[in-house]
Length: 154
Image (cartoon, rainbow, N blue to C red; front, side):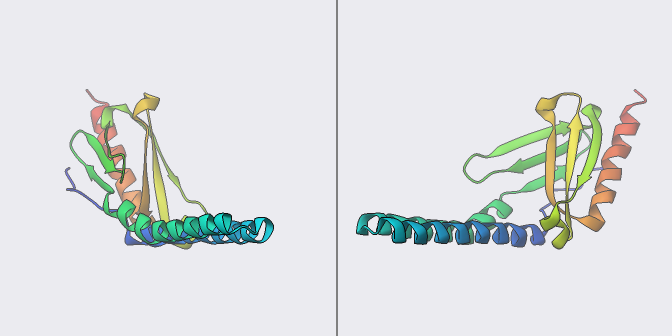
């Protein structure tokens, strides 16, 4: 049942770039308002520096975030590894899985992506698998739920 390490859809990276572009636009607007209202060189320089920082994060952040996301279906369950600054490695054992919801917000719909929300017997081991292509999500969900059903016979 092992799938090997899997990446998220490349469309997830594009969606994250769009989200960060929105934050960049917000930062530019705030910087412009501060520069007009306060009209002091130090405040204007700080606002400009903040805009540059957000611009760099908007370009680099989604790429790093995407590059650091990995997931794998194993015989024991779902293993997820992600994080740029704080690395998170978690395993969701199949015997704990109670429910798998397919979620899709407006941006995800625009990019034809979904998130799999996995609910377990312990809230500490719940998890989300974002950035999955919509046509692939049901197969992943069925594969995980099939393993859960097989474990119920024990």
